[in-house]
Image 1 (cartoon, one colour):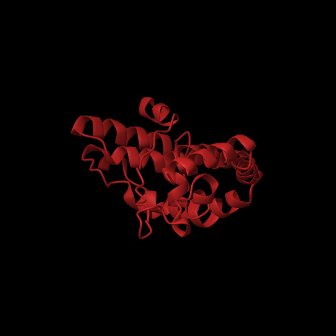
Image 2: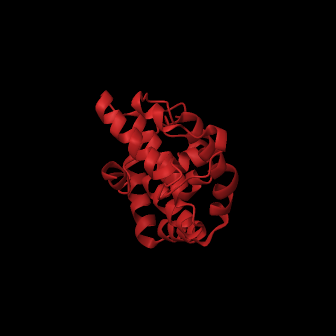
Image 3: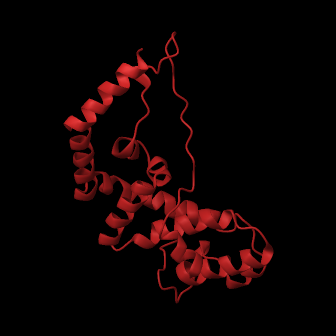
Length: 184
């Protein structure tokens, strides 16, 4: 469980790159501003999972729904894909199996019976060995939990908090200063 515990302090698994669209003078185009926070989370589950704060809030929501194991399994699979070395891969594969997939798993995920892995496959692990199961869990979250999350108090309160922060006098003053510096 050691690597799973480390994952609880989620580090971004993806680094999103969104190139800015510039106008003819090289200034960022106002019609293509980069979305942040809840606005970005609301565009897709993928965007939510790229943001550590988004993952934190989604986990909080899933915990209340008694399905936090889904996102933890998905994150564990993403981390597993980066594992180097056969011995490490075997250890992590067994840990994922025992935590999420075995009939005695402490945080068993709900995957189709025929998709379950046999314990024998753990002897010859490979980076994508959990991909089919991970995709099932991703789709379960995407078409079930994610839409409810976007309507939840957790999401809506965070969104409201962001909006209040953006509209605060301090934020407006900082934006004006940045605008003056940028336009000189």
